[in-house]
Length: 140
Image 1 (cartoon, one colour):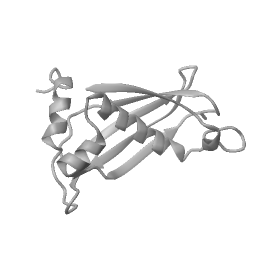
Image 2: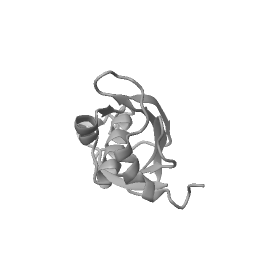
Image 3: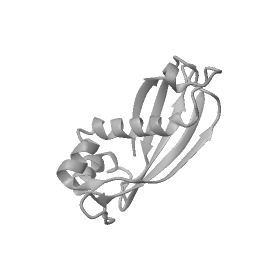
Image 4: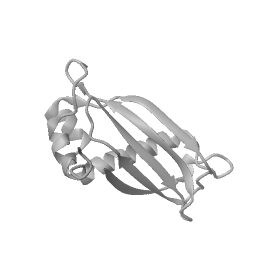
C-alpha cells in the first residue's frame, strides 16, 4: 500500500455564494492528489504519455460528501493506492479540513490505453517498477 498527502487551499473562484467549495471541484482536487502521488515516485503523467505511449482515462468516480470545505481553508488530501495496478488502477482519496474533519472521500478508477490507438493495455512496467517497493510486504 502507498499513501501520499497533498495540501491545497480553497480559492475564492471555487466557492459558491455561501463560501462553500463547489461540489464539482472535488473531482479536480482528486486529480491533483493522484498526479502528485505519482510525481512523488519520481514519475509523471506527462512522462507516461510522452515517453511510454500510455494514457489513463477515468472509468469511474465516486464521492461521498460529509461537510463543506470553506473559502481560504487549507485542505489535506490523503490518497491511497491499495493494490498494484493491472489493467486498471483505483486511487482512494479522503479530504480533511483544517480541523482534521473529513470533508469528503471517494475513489477514482482509471484504465490504461495506448496513446496511438486507444487500445486497452496493462499498467506500464515503468510505473509498476516505481510502485512495487511499496507493496512488497503485502504481496502473497
